[in-house]
Length: 462
Image 1 (cartoon, rainbow, N blue to C red):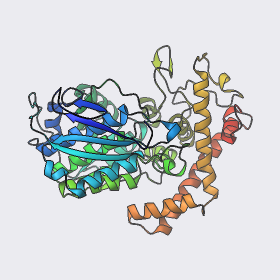
Image 2 (tube, rainbow, N blue to C red):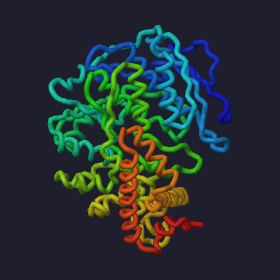
Image 3 (tube, rainbow, N blue to C red):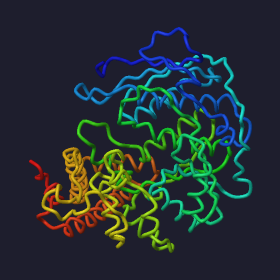
Image 4 (cartoon, rainbow, N blue to C red):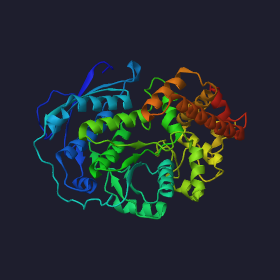
């Protein structure tokens, strides 16, 4: 398949249904909705529209994972999904359909098309949980919660500045793990915080694509629809400035821009939900112009034991089957997430709070940065070079306020945040300068002869 050929995916209500698709999957077999979690999520009666949204989440996730990208012919794929829905007339509205397709295209860089068929088979709704009781007498904020440092930080900071607010976490778990969440909640928050696991799980085996750009669509949509069902509330996006803006300013190779935490995506998602439900949902980005280091400093300012929090929250994005020591998951120390964490730790003066597989950044060679022999060292080396270059490329922009990418981002953010462009441009440059200062200090501590300094200059390993 090249990038111009559409790939058709049909979601069927039962096995053996007729189709002319490249891939056919079955509801309740390949895409499974947990009815117990669904009733817990909905606070009230589960409607046909709610079932439709859960099927949509499953279909989008499956399409994104099952259809591989062919990078030699381009990043983009053309995905056509035929989905059975209960509220067919509603979904076929051009406003709803266009808003959905544009939202996903903006997020993933692919062309998405949807066709809707009438769904007839009622799903199994046995084994219901009691509805989640929130928002009875106080404001509610939903947080897509990844169990990482930024998620915890924005929970703690919101709790400190608005203690009367009720917080609901949409957690990164596809299973009903209520006991595990309660244990984490008591340990991390010293409280029992309401949480909603994702009620949709995939059981389709052929999911080979690793880019998985639709992950935010799942969590943000669940959080926002929770606010819709509650008829009040907002959604807080916890990502820091480097994570929110870096993917737009420093794209990787021929990939589409990373926009998972970017206001342009959340506004499009909000527009889709408004067309679908008639309700307006507000997305907040409190750390949009705060580096990860500044976020950690903010946590210190509200009395959080930062060393303990850092120890309890994982950041590494590297495959845990490879980033481990004695079969125990470990931060690799060289991926983008790990480098950003290390920069932030140094800026907040909590050095040593995390153990890293590649711990010695001042070593002249990456091989000397770890105490163990890694058979997959070449892969780590490639990741390390790219991560260091990305940090440096973002730093270089701090000295280029008049470049097209900066002005383009300023105009775009001004539109999505309803602020004057000049004010947004100023905030972007202040953020980039802050990142440059943190990264420069971090590099200086490693030394000019370190492998990291060479990697930042683009001269390591070549």
